[in-house]
Length: 193
Image (cartoon, rainbow, N blue to C red; front, side, top):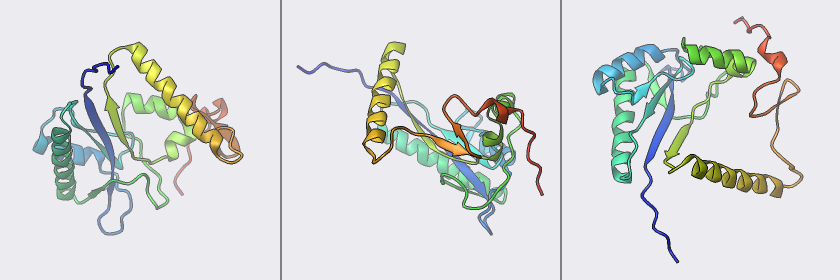
């Protein structure tokens, strides 16, 4: 028996890298690009700062209409690309920079806490992503969906030859979703050479 389910709203959030158009290296232009983009597209929160000054973020409105979502994302991408171009930088949708970079954290209380909590990882990372948000009807439904996804991911990881779980090592220490080892949080920041 089929049970009817209400349509779920979907929204997309994208982090885009700001780069020098000549050499492709990340450019610390987040504030300038945001200011111009908001002048052109409005200060409605669909364009915002991101963790690093070498990034900008766009976010669609939640909708059940996938065609409208596509149109809005195109409008936002084109608008932020034009705004960035007018300031002398380009936007690119990439996971990370292929160049060695010393990213600059965006001045913000939340981001300051992230740098304090995640130490060297937060200071050195410059990653961008696309996040798809889907509505849920209750906290219980959300938890159930996360548990199901976790089980599937765990099963897939275990299927891989010799892989009993996922572990990332940085400087010889394991990093987990709980954050970096406490020792990293108190390490002094690396100074540019």
